[in-house]
Image (tube, rainbow, N blue to C red):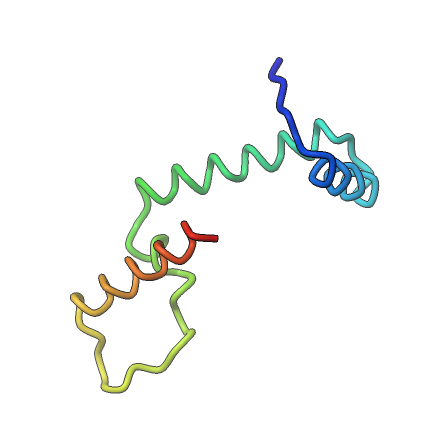
Length: 85
């Protein structure tokens, strides 16, 4: 068993979503944790596609063929933005 402290606003959101989905709050939280854990695992051990799939198709390259160096910069920038959310 694990106890997690939630602020009242987050707890209300969890309860509302659980009711909307017709599941218990425990089931909703378990599912969210499992998804987050599988995402974290996939990021560390995944393919380059897994690491960049959210970048695919979001912009047109100014020239044919995006260099590996530029792709690395884009990935670092994207990760930094995601951490700051």
